[in-house]
Length: 169
View 1 (cartoon, rainbow, N blue to C red):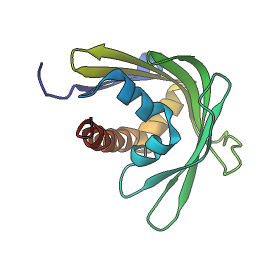
View 2: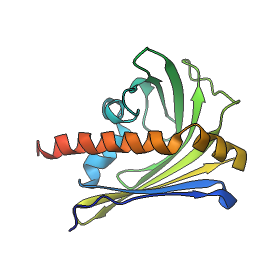
View 3: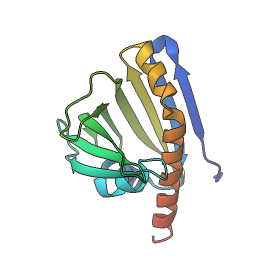
């Protein structure tokens, strides 16, 4: 099994979607936990030097995750993820958007639907992600705001977290 990391990032403007495929050198249970537990998300979700801080999380259908990305100067940008469907260690979908510290969605900024699928592939886990936007304008706004760069940096943080956990197993 190759140790190379698969990373595909595709913008599909006609369908107002972003498709990301990413591999991790870890079993599904470890990768799944990293995406579904607040104490682990806080370790990787924000691109450095920013950090993620969870205010509340209830990972269940109908539940939500309320968190802030915090700059070194303590500037906060709040996000809310509303979970729609969950199939343990296989997939989850959710609406994601910007909000205030109380979780009220900011309707002036794009919101999108995430569909994350997890698949064991040899010694790796593949995560296939589809983000769907209400409009091409919303998709382009997220790209303009640096989503690709920020998400890529967060996934690199996740690689570091996974490596630290694999060494403990």
